[in-house]
Image (cartoon, rainbow, N blue to C red; front, top):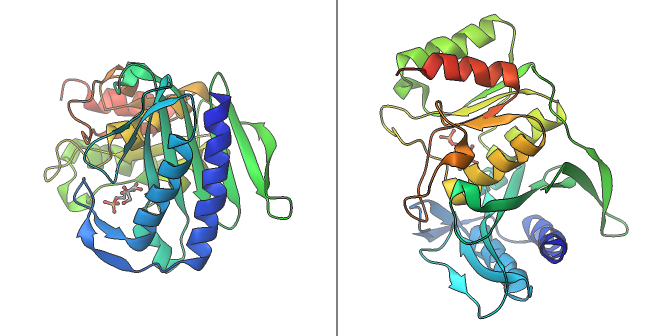
Length: 280
Ligand code: P6P
């Protein structure tokens, strides 16, 4: 596992350099999820593949950008990753990220054994979740990731990231979001899952919601590459990740690019979600 984390540090260094120097333009292609690709999506995916396939403990890699996994004849772990999540935000200079789920024997929620993500923002930061959740920050001079602190969520927070197209929210979901704002929650939503969830972790609490909607009943965010890794991080940080009804890590992936409604946050906010969705 340590070997994979060390490879992710090298990946993060190379992607952060690419973001600063490479063309942020769009391709005329779509990825396996149907998202329009930017050139940096392809470049980042190539960087991840290079390092993970050279990591002996990695048996298979599955990219959000691809239809199928790349398999090896050695190794123990399966790594599902989103090489550059929120890449469409790069050309407006907002923070983006890379997300890694480290699995064993399969890609269901129960199979995830560790998770990591990288935020490419004013600073490059990396969070690694194994038994605990650790924050690292890139020292731009030494090019080393330095340990900063362990991340723990409080039982309640103050910020709220309400994703999804509001026009298509179910009425009971809208009522819940409105009631939280009436309680004084502050709107914190950039459209980048990685910085949005990183902010709630570093502010020690709150709620991020990407619900099922009338136009997308199964939500938008992908189980293997986005949802299960962050559900693992939040759980290890003392928070919760649910689909409105159940712990996200009890879910199965019906196919590589399966999606689910998802809510990540502290105890108070997640209890509100479960109360709202109960019986719906
Ligand atoms: P919307 C980025 O495209 C992404 O996959 C996540 O990073 C982000 O949380 C979500 O989509 C934003 O979606 O519908 O608000 O643009």
